Image 1 (tube, rainbow, N blue to C red):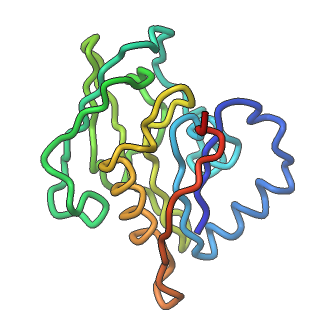
Image 2 (tube, helix red, strand yellow):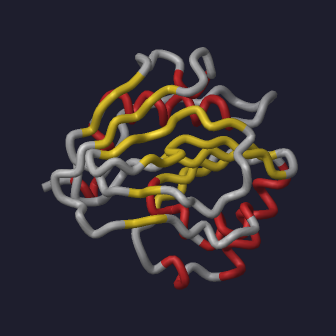
Length: 177
């Protein structure tokens, strides 16, 4: 299992690393891509598209509501029909990705935009989940619903027949103030 979050400097990731991760995903490693990781070399390589999206600099004070579109899906197990983050960076459609295997969450923003914020894919033997929240200036990764979705996604994407994922506290040193 690999969880990939990135804000910038995506082009600085060495191609050899991208090739190794790509190979492992095709062999069956699960990959969870968070927030701006949509623009990482590995996600773009796995999707085969630009992964561009609508973006607006009106980051501050933007409320985002996440709507569960696949009740009963393992990734949204334990999540109500929706949850809200008071502050998050706005991402909107069009999101240049292939049609997801499943869209388990969509978001609506205070400005009226919508976004496919929780999407599943399979590449080779590997399962991939893209999850939108996580701007570095907000506390999204402290929200119980966000953490539950990530934990569920890790369980969903983990290769079958391997060790059962074990969870402790998420260490988010870059968020500590």
